Image (tube, rainbow, N blue to C red; front, side):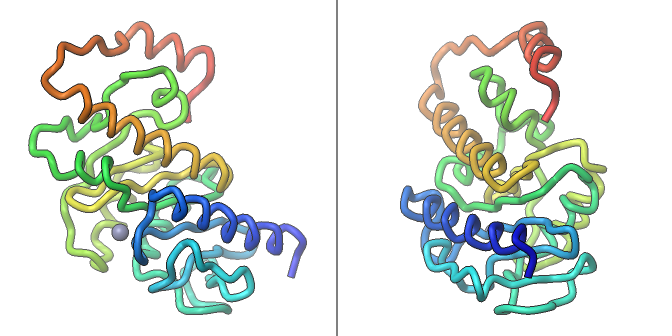
Length: 213
Ligand SMILES: [Zn+2]
């Protein structure tokens, strides 16, 4: 096993436990993955993110075929869809975190921009978030719907389900998923109040200065 793969396995266990310990994942909900040069490391099915054993993490080849470790999460196609359409994506985090999932259940959110530009940080770390219509869990159609976005979004919100966030590294994907969750909480906290969103000009200035996700 390459040193990079060993390090990725240990980082998945560490950051998975961190997400679980802080309540971003409960029970066996949520899954995380890392892209390697020769395949994908994926959290196993029915595993709690606090219990990931680095040596038993699932390894798949680039086509999604099982190579080693425990059986991969049933939501593997969500991750593959990001890797196949975003060449820069090095990791994917999928959560059922409470506030983002609450937002995913609202009927009135903008499907092309579910997370409004409340703060510069959500613009810089998450970008625009697309709503993916509801699909029964385990149905690969949600992977297909993500593929149809052609990699234009680093993060999506699955309707009545939760967020899927990609990043260049696992650390950046985890930070972006946390930022998305906290911003969803702000959206709910501000409901009914007169909100000043960042203007198009301010968002464009952030993208010009810090680049796109
Ligand atoms: Zn899920």
